[in-house]
Figure 1 (cartoon, one colour):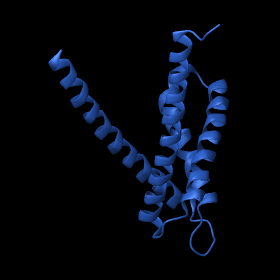
Figure 2 (tube, helix red, strand yellow):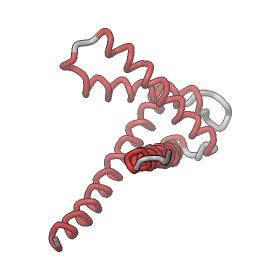
Figure 3 (cartoon, helix red, strand yellow):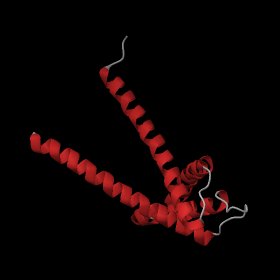
Figure 4 (cartoon, helix red, strand yellow):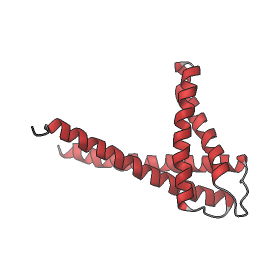
Length: 142
């Protein structure tokens, strides 16, 4: 009664997905800390930024489930981006405080989210270019 090769491949795939989610979470906390530093002027603690990222993912999941129930199927992508942006800004406002312990304000939190989004778009373009070069060179040698 050994495991089949398909079960082993599925387990490796699930492990790879777990590693990707953890790395994405850690990278998102770093990007959030850097964008907070650019807007507010000091860098928050990394565990607090990591908590903000995790809470943002959970709150966005819940908010998108609610929005998915009440909206039509045609407005999905843009609406999900807007909901993620607004929920993330609210959580940044409440969890990442200024140096004196007060909230930074929803406007500054929106700017932090906007800078974070721009940084992720740039990172995605760089990763896409690296993948295109890597896989393009593999296809050229085949």
